[in-house]
Image (cartoon, rainbow, N blue to C red; front, side):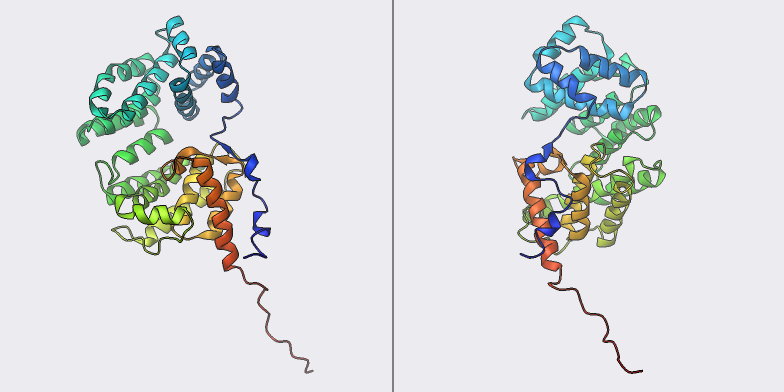
Length: 342
């Protein structure tokens, strides 16, 4: 381990260079301007995504802008005052209201009160699937029935059949932790992945189902122990066969390899995949993903395990290297003996 661990750091950026939830080159200027009280760049950014039907980017940027508005609301309040009917401002307003509702002990009651904001966001641009992703999150928090969920899901896929955010939200609703089961969750994920377009992040949905399974209450103790590198979970248990978990991880690995190393776009799914691989004790595969992640750590999934997600990620990197080093022979095995006879 002492000999091999330093060598295994090749391709991994130093700890000081790793960033948590780093914005891309389009979002970063909007956040900087918002921090100065100027909502203009954020409004322009979301308007561009709407006009160009960049629904995946629109969803990501909306989530990040709403998160920023939670702690620095002045710029967003000024945006709403200036343009109260702006479709982009209404979208961020709906996302922000749902996130705040989720944080309250009176979650279901507060979320029901913000339903009109979701309606306003959806009506502001009937083409936009992002309000329906927010509505699916909202449905989970308000204990919506399967019938209501299916109606919302139909509205979402009618607008964008392959929208990753809507699929990820639907998967959570169908998980055993909420209103479905492990089997229902995996069946949904695998069907969606098989229908996905080449390169689509939807192909990671089975790995998300695996994550939901591995972090379910029956596995919570193993999850904490495995991610802290005190020893991997030796049993996957429950009703999902190990082969199905491995197949989900393999599909996500194939997708990850389609993107360049250090690409911020698939960073979250690579972080998620790394967690799954660690739980499955696939250490070499986990190390490969850590190299592909580069400096782009993401809060999810590490904030589900620790209050310091960046610290958790960095600890995990060290732990994976140690595990791989412990499996590496001190010297390469010798080849077959060569005969000198002629």
